Image (cartoon, rainbow, N blue to C red; front, top):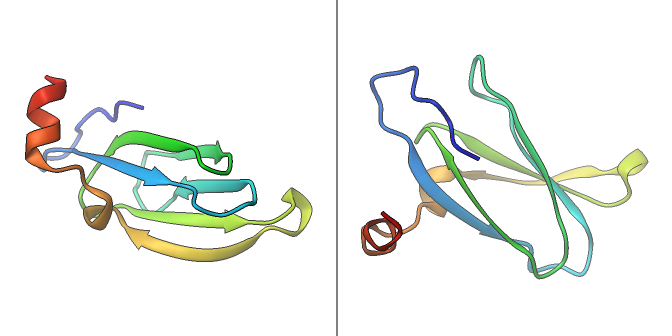
Length: 88
């Protein structure tokens, strides 16, 4: 997902891996005028772009009873500059 920078802050490239045996739904909901939600299967890795202030919510369990199991600052999920430069 590519997030259009509406702010003066540059977006960062992030990565998350579902290391559980359950399907997870990840969301970013703390940014105004932006919404990000993906289903992440066990062992799957997602790469996404967001603002440094974003928080990734991790919801685990069945959809009807999914619980918020973690909330990770996206700065902690940021890919290194070396990887970012290789992708360019």
